Image (cartoon, rainbow, N blue to C red; front, side):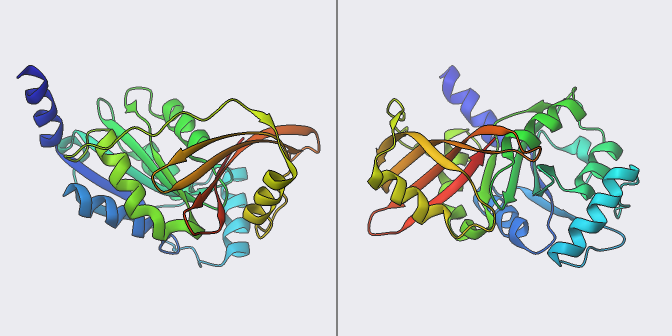
Length: 257
C-alpha cells in the first residue's frame, strides 16, 4: 500500500513543460511530453527572434557567448513556484543548452524543483547540458533527461512513452532493456554498419574501435567506442550509439563525448 501511495503521489505532482525551440524540433518533443503527461506547457521566446538560419544562429550565438550578453526573453506567464516537476527543453548549441535558456536559468528560481532536461541535437549534448544545469541550478534536483537527434524526432513519441513510464512521470510499466554486451573489437561487418549509420552526418565522427550490443523487441542496438579528433586537434574517444530496427536501416542516435 505504501508503494502504491508513493507512485500515486508521483503522478499527482504538478508538472510544467517549459521549452525554447528555434526551428520547431524541440517544440514537437515538448508537445509530445505534454500530450503524454497532461502537464502544463509554455514556450520561451526571445525578444529578438533568431532567424532559423544555421550559420546566422552560430554567428549570433558566438557573439553572445563571447560577450556574455545573453538574449533577452519575453516574460513567462506560468509561475515556477506552482510546479513540482519541470521538463526543461532546448536545442543543443555549442555543446550545451541554447542561449535563451541561459537567460531563463539566470532569471528564474528553480530551487527545490525536480528538473527533467530534454533536448534535440545534431549529434549529442544531453549529458553535457545536464551537467551544466547542475552547476547553474545547485538548489534544484536535475534528474535523468531525454535527448533525440533532430533527424529522428519522428521516433520521439515511442521513446518518450518508455522514458516517461520508466521514470514514473506517467502510469504504466515497461520491460527493462538488457545491458550491452562487453566491448569487443569491431568486425568488418560492424564497421560497415557504423559507416552506414554515420556517413551522412555533416561532420566526421571518427573510427570505431570496439563495440557492444544488445537485442531489443524493436531490433539491435550498438554501442561503439570511437577514436576521433577533438576541436583542439588532439585524439579523443567518444561513444556513439547506433540502432537498427527490424527491417530498417542503421541510424546513429547519439554521440557522448
